[in-house]
Length: 196
Image (tube, rainbow, N blue to C red; front, top):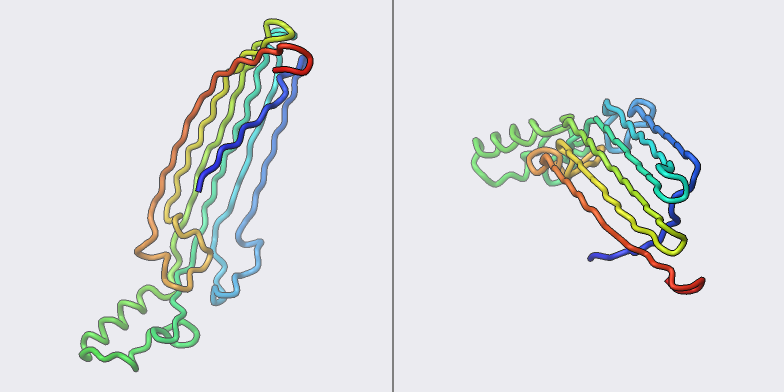
């Protein structure tokens, strides 16, 4: 599913406008996950950014820019909570229903036990930026140049659950990288007070 959104925004003003923001959270500040078996993952999340809008030339040339940075470092807890594979607490693998040979059942139990209650490092770092320049040579015309970037990288971030009760944090999880850039040029001409 996809969509397109077109939006018209007001051009710049003759004043300087600056804003900044920051969000910080430690995992230790949060209550433990119900499925985490008493484990509180270490890590933190930091999201900060700034925007600035200013006139370059009074009443004719304006700049606006915004940038945001996310730095998230955490742990996920890999668990297997399945009554066919593990004991009710999810702390040991069951072999009672195993129909293979004894050595195969023992190997399977060892393999599953190595994955139970293991912490897996996770991280996500992203940068998002937007810039726009408006040139207004007269009251009827505006030329706009805009561009944006988005760059994201995550380690073990495809499954970003705090606790994976299906064992999904080991083996199927991966490093993901995504990057997008675009630019637009626009010209707006006002024919009359009611037509653009």
